[in-house]
Amino acid sequence: MRIKNIIKLVLFFTTLNGFAQEPSFYIRSLRSIHIENKPSVIQEIKFNDVDVVYNKIAQFYDHKTIISAPGNYEISGFANINPGVMGNNIKDSLKIELLLIKNHQTADETVLGSAYFTYSYGNFDVAAGLHIEPKIVYLNADDKVSLCVKILPESTVEINKNPKYHHINKPTGMEQIAGVRIAKVL
Amino acid sequence: MFCNFAYSQQQFYYTTSDHQSFRLRPGTEKTFHYINLDRSQIVTNSLFTIDNSTKKLIIPENGFYEITATFHFNPHTSTIKNNRGGVNFGIVQISENLEQYVAATRKSFNGDNQDGFSVIKIYPTIIYLQAGVAVAPAINSGLMGNVLLGCEIGCEKRNKNCTSFEWYIKLISKEDAYQKYY
Image (cartoon, rainbow over all chains, first blue to last red; front, side, top):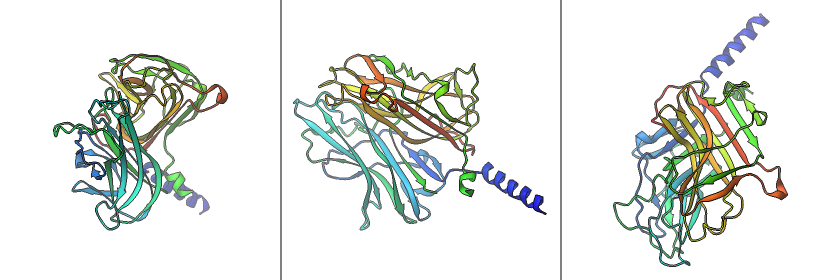
């Protein structure tokens, strides 16, 4: 009887291990994205269905990432941003912030994490990676998680205002554009 | 315990304080400069088949993989101030017709960090990889104004045992899928 139970236990673990899949969500954009020249305004980076790489913990529809079950999650995100201007003065600078926001444009809107980069003269037309480091946060079922960008008001240079220019783009020499990872903390 | 068992993955973890220098030239963004790995500095490996003759780390089976990495990098220059200083760091997928970052970070250096070490992180990135492709850590020139003749991954003299490079890759799901590359 004891041996039978041990065999059952081993089979249970083997089956569990065989189907083990990490409870995470990962999405990245395959397309470059335009940003409006609107300092202080939070602009959402929109992802599409085709951008979902891996998803075991959320629903994704209408460009929204919606958490399925409450719990602690590790979140992180990135965007490669090139302001696309030259700048006139050595003292000029341009500061852009990347944010992960819970329930954007609702009464419950909360910044979950952020990162910023200050572009300096000579580097205004070079993509910089803005990376929000992994952080554990509590999320409820139906919470929406958005990746957003904001041009900070202390900037002394405007970003490229051509409506056809895409600021969030592949940097020279690499393919990555923008992405978000959400992982359930076990 | 149950959860740990259930999610015990095939994984590979490497960490080193070794130094390696590079010569990055503007306009050579298609040239990847690979990080030399030393078998003795592999901390954990239940993912790759590695023996004394192994030259490449080959993905063993189709699936979703999660990658993280850290580079401790110094451009060692005074030429970035007021000039372009974009450099890329990451993990490259290599197959017959493809040599491309599957997880990467762009670091744009400026006058403040052009002659000192910076920590460049590849935060957890999930990708689908097919069995048989090789994966390797690399850096390449992004958009730069001047050549970086002696840039390096390594440690400061006062902290020789720092982590100069670290790489973790694990198989997180064997579910079938297709992703173009990253």
